[in-house]
Length: 411
Image 1 (cartoon, rainbow, N blue to C red):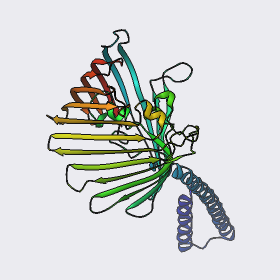
Image 2: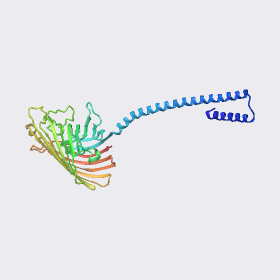
Image 3: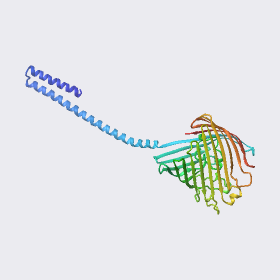
Image 4: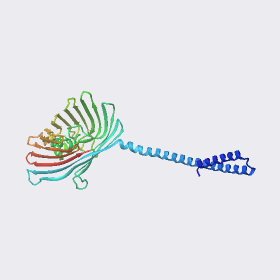
């Protein structure tokens, strides 16, 4: 019987008592019985009230424990959610099929399938003005032992916004030199392979460890300056610029590199850029001589509706008798690339390239290559590529003609 039933019963008894008293005067025994019944009802009510108070207290304790648990959970998962929301993951990759005939020897044809690159980006924003940026790459699928692949960290740096127009960075970062060196996701350029000028002369992909400062101005100009680890060019590798990349792996830093870039983008559809690099000893103090290195690159990109054209030139000058003796004291290259997008999905291009890693010599050492083909974007982040290349090489050098197919993605 709950408290409400008991209260009702008590009321009925009292009412009955009144009715009885109204009809006749009860005896002492009847009065005593009535008092006993009322006392029993009051005791039952007290017991029910005590039980309800005890149950309420237990509920309060449960609610308090639940609240504490929720607060602790919010602290734990809130921090995890905050970290997750400030961390981003991305990446890109390229699968290439090359079917190239070697016109020089006919023996060393290049007919292969290659997962050329598999890359993951991991970025984290500590605050609105402070962030970490990284890029982890696996080339040619398998590394270690006698395998052709490599595992590389192309970027790992912290960037801090000094104000609305200037940002400083420190760590390992891509050099502001050329076009593809900083923007090389496969969905952003034409051709299965990266163009040979920005591969052999720039040399993409080129990263160094150091510090840098980037500035942006309201008039459309931007600048980048940096002090980084330098190149290490060896006579045994014919002083080729690409062979001098140290990739921030126990890199010699006896001679640091100074680099700078000025870019102009105020006119819609137009980008003009000039980059420079200087190093006082590309031997990194590993020889008796101290031979300096100077390089620069300039390019223009112009887009109008569906049409786009790119022109780029790069040049290196090396001091030193050993480099001069083999013509490597001058190394340069250039290309021009018009393209046209018929739709958002389909675009075609043609490109003419020339490059020379021994331009200071008297002999014929210049490579020439013509490329043409198409890109088909299944999605903004997925592209299919097909192109044909025709190469003209110096006497005695490999000369590859044929076609390339590629699949690229970015997310």
